[in-house]
Amino acid sequence: MQEKSNMRVKSYISSIKEYGRGIIGGLLFSLPMLYTMEVWWTSFNTNPWQLMLYLAVTLVLLLGYNTYAGLRPSASWKEVLVDSIEEMGLGLILSFLFLWLLGQVDVQEMSLQRIVYLVVIEAMPIAIGVSVGTAQLGASHEDEEEETDQQQQQAQSSGGAPQQQGGASGGASTLEQFMLAACAGMLFAANIAPTDEVMVIATGATPFQLLVMFLVSLLLSGAILFYLSFRGAYETPAQELPTVLEVLWGVSITYATAFCVSAGALWFFGRFEGAGLQICIEATVVLALVSSLGASAGRFLLDQEYT
Image (cartoon, rainbow, N blue to C red; front, top):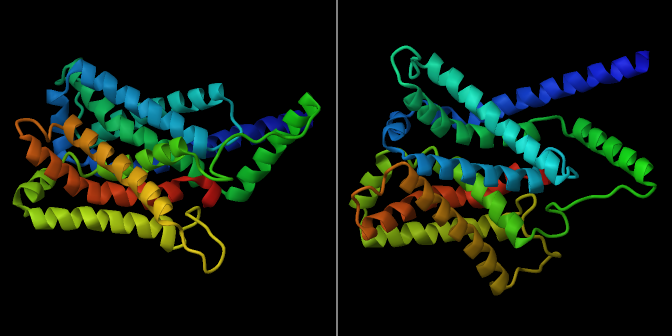
């Protein structure tokens, strides 16, 4: 009985630590948005279907991250779904509390709809940060021990060897690369997309400057993915360089993901409203310079297998 009680207490403490790491991670990645006036204004112009799409995209990103780089790589799809929903819920709670603390939520003066829209818009980046913080800010040796114990228990119950599910080991799939790049790129892009500075830079930049931004984005992504020896990046035997096709494929996936994430973030936060196609593309190129850096380097930082 005493042993079971100690195990139960240890489990509670571990859960509290996980939630604590999630809270810190959510705040680390999202505090700039909580302090950004343009994000507050977005809640006035968001339609219900846009809000539902925003929630759906965030859930997909959380499911992808928790599947490929989450806290428990051997978790079943039900556990991944539960974790993702919990992270969204924690994001909503943190969003409401901090918006109230910053004086942006007044339950007596504001309508319920206005409060809901504002809280949800701020909460989704927090939820991604919660997921990252829960997985990445813990003591790795403790997590490894817990994972080993779980696998041993599964092996004993099934009468076989511990099973490991997908992950980045053994070569990341295209879907895994896309999901991790999208999560990392979104964490970077979401903090900048709502601001006016992106459109100011886009309208003031010359075609040559925009071309250089595009080329610099590709150059940085290629260097990070293949030549700077980031943990989890492309690895080859000594003196062997990646082929041109490998570089083109990796850089193309990363930049395309960053470009789509940038365009989606700018569209959601109303930066494209009233703007022509040329300005929209130029603004996306400007923001993609930031999000591509996150999509290439950040995805290795978000994957616990390499940290």
